[in-house]
Image (cartoon, rainbow, N blue to C red; front, side):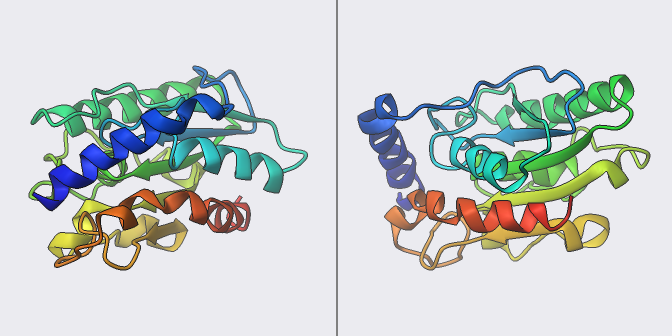
Length: 213
């Protein structure tokens, strides 16, 4: 019930205010210096994601002056269907592999919010199966691409509620925000609105990424 309330609130909050936001354009990136690959949350409006993707991309542009940034909105349903996160997982991996082949000097920043964090988790080899709107892994970034992933930025990550986190190869390049009381990422959390407040962490996430590029 708390999760359903959270998703409904997310839709309502975004629908009430999204018209006032100027979002960055998501592109199937040319050979920019850094490609920001963002997986939005369930039913989240916005170009890259109203609550996380759009403000994080804007913050990265401010922090990474002198670098040419492109953005990519992961193409997946972001709904409650059982294969939604798996579709996002496949699309993210396919996009990064394609870009890495076409643009040998390009680096990547991966951004995931809520269900989008499940998408990113799976793509870097951490299964989200068993988590809210999670799925088994269907594709992972190849070892040859791994050094080019500069940072992984996660928000309201559902695997945390089942006692998991990003470990291994990507751990030192990952920052994973979970607001106190957020029922999506904190077992026993009961503050639905906490899941909607991650815009406030955009600057901190961008600063972390800037330190890894």
